[in-house]
Length: 225
Length: 227
Image 1 (tube, helix red, strand yellow):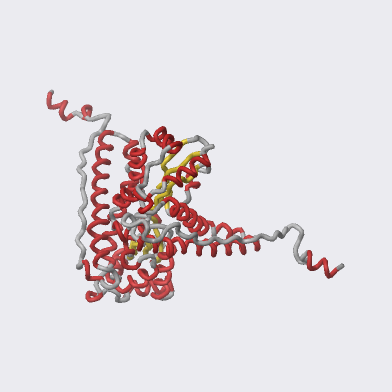
Image 2 (cartoon, rainbow over the protein chains, first blue to last red):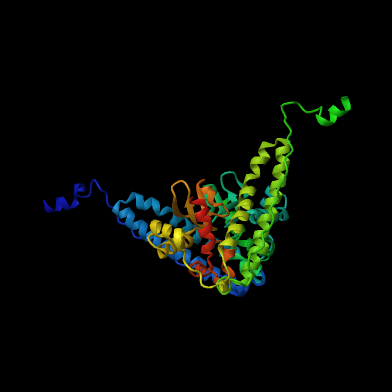
């Protein structure tokens, strides 16, 4: 009889309890030295960007996740909703910067080498040429008001490449559920100010020297299969 | 008769297209009321120079461009273009407005220690926030928590006759948060306002800027608007 009450669903209903554990995140290592992208991006910027900015997004995202877990456990709907801003901002910051470090590569390791193969052809098809794509990304990045990102995206549904921008730390998916980020360029001032000051267009012109087209091609080939 | 008439009234225009002559008043970069190094060591002269000569100047230049284009679009009756220009007008016009206020919100270090406001504004701060320090804490907290670029404001709400702390995103002026809000103080929390000196540590910038805040100006605006 005692066994029955232990196994009986009645003891669990109506509040169905699930056991969750919070998976926390860690700052990914940079795949190259802080100074490896010079002179396109200074070592000082890379170090602050990685160790301070990205780390802070990770720390604050983990904090928000713990608070979310507690709010969900308590059935605190208001608390859950209030946490969405912190989750989007810090989670987005973590997602975006994790992609960004992969989008960059030292020149000595192939950074800046134009895309070949299927991505190269797709760029020509959808933008006319690589130069046209770069021009469009630079122009959208320069025109972005405030902080944000400019993306080269694959629209998996329409099977077409697109240039998109997102404000603040909004990840690319906020612009469309079928969008896959191939390349993202951070145009927050912290990404370039120490070196380029107010001249964002110079940062955009120079970053192409260290763009990792190989990574973009890998993602493109995997997602367009 | 016919000659005069064709000059005075364009004959190819229908009467429904009323033509009025508008003039265009362009904006100019206001001079700083102090030298670029006058706020050291709170805000470096390098930051002040870039902030004024590059950032604010660019807002002025681009606002004027947007105004010219707006003028043309209005002349042509091009509604799409008029609407399409609103983003540039808000961003650059807002940038000009906000920074024009900001330079007046700051005062040189050698003008003596920045004293908390006395008299009417001081009393209103105590009434609405409990204490001067409580107001500072609140503004610093909101400024630190602002996601992305923007401003944190001490505002006077003319309708409710009370002070408020507000934030605006990017270069949105304070009025976008409420038509009855008057800016007394604005603190720029865009990264360009502090990064060269404070790097990622926005909170240090916010802590220090109070040393150079011009409460006299805030008091003047308050007393004028609070009648």
